[in-house]
Image (cartoon, rainbow, N blue to C red; front, side, top):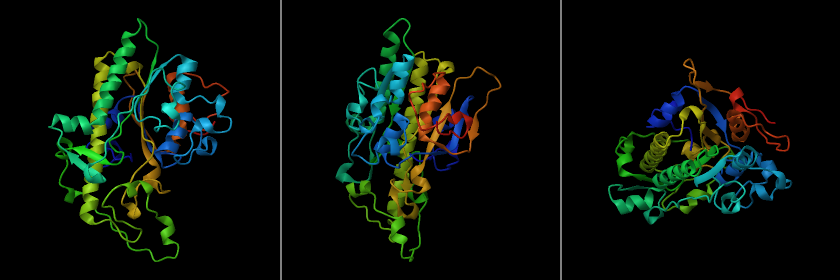
Length: 363
């Protein structure tokens, strides 16, 4: 997910719930947050272990952080909250990448069995598709994020009812709508103008001898039919615009589910004044810039991600704020510990620092 949110100044995005979260008292919006690797599995291994890829040795889809030299003593972020601070840790949706580590790092990271609903392919294996969510069967097939929210709230209900004084909760929820393929509902599509209203990107052919070195055809788009693009041949304009509209519809879907999740937490009795909320993504997304699609490049569009952190506050003078200094996803681990008042033990040498200082910085 790239920072395609109204809170980041994106005028195309329809994201009222995340925009409201960014404006809430006690919230910091980080405008320059970056992932370590613009690829889901290595980025999530880095983020959730708190270690840089050179430590995790996870650069693609072949290894995970538990296999790295010295990793036997490493605690993942949810594992640290669970083992060192007594939290109940639960995972719903895509949090760890499937099988990296195996079984979503259960039993190490989580107090119960992680659940990740499977996102289906589009008909004819296209890169994007619109589905009719007025049809119950179709909606049940494609709307995996609604299912994720439902399961997450059921987990919260079970946690609250399991003991008279339940332990603190670490809830990780991973939405999949902006993952390819971009399947999106007709009801969300109707919120947006026609595809012809969306940008069209045209880059001149670079005749320098090393021009092709900047561009490569990402493996992910090779999986889908009808995608014909090279460094000197952009995608046809109408196809670009249809894909832009599809992508923004998936972003609005995430926003819808965040709104449902926050409302559901409030209805279940979770006290917002005692809850930390972090909204992040594993990597960015290219939408035709330099004729690139998907991620897996060294350009800003692939590495820059949204990061919104809301901390509890009772102060009537508290306001939201914006951090314009660079921070990294390796900062998430120490930042959430510090925000929760959980000390970071000396045996965990994580790569990042507390981003609340507006700049992070390795430990």
